[in-house]
Image (cartoon, rainbow, N blue to C red):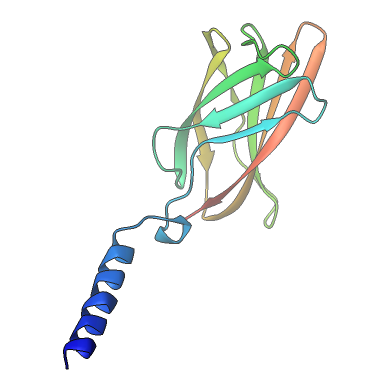
Length: 138
């Protein structure tokens, strides 16, 4: 009897321990994404303070040189979202230079739930680079 009680207690504790743990299955997705550009010149880090959802979302971009790891202020940066399955484009957003290689991307809108591909393009002096990030909008 005592052995069965201990087994039941272990099962209950295991269940309760799992309930509080957050992972990708809890509906939340990681907001921070980073990648090297397709041309190998720039490193892009795209993030947001809030969970990404339908409607307008404000993003923050950090742009740096891959070779020197230094921030890249003064770039022309544009961001656009596309829903490949439905061929839906969202309004593009021009990033606002916040200084020090940091850029604010206000009000990028996702019109419906589903998978969206966000393309970030940056040009500084005579160098251009771009990358894409994928988001599943609930």
